[in-house]
Length: 188
Image (cartoon, rainbow, N blue to C red; front, side):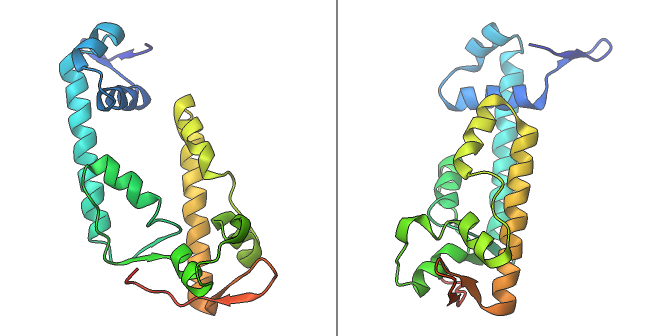
């Protein structure tokens, strides 16, 4: 493991390495076994896991108290991921899920994936996703955090722009080029 030595202090491990150690502990490996295999002390690994848990708890508090959250298929995807990571159900009272709003308008019809975020955005605001979400785990496995952050940032901007369009005009463009009215609901 490449590490930096800071004067006479202990080595500093890169964030990607600390994240990986945290993931391995969460998957069942012990800090002691990881310490023997990868060099940092078991206590350092326990500290990294504790910090990650505090960071996740702080994120949950921010999300649950947000004035507004906008997602796309967030109820069926993001909630599941967050619930699993937190070990509890997350409650987001001020959330708008644009995908659910579209499904409610379309009487729950979703033919052939034509209502995926990238497709809706291409039709409605003229640009789509830079990568499909299924590629994100591969970036994580490869440790390509820069590309992952860029992908996530682009997705957030895309969703923000779609939401602004819906707020301004009240519709998205359907697969046949038709305007599909969207009535946002906070009580999904």
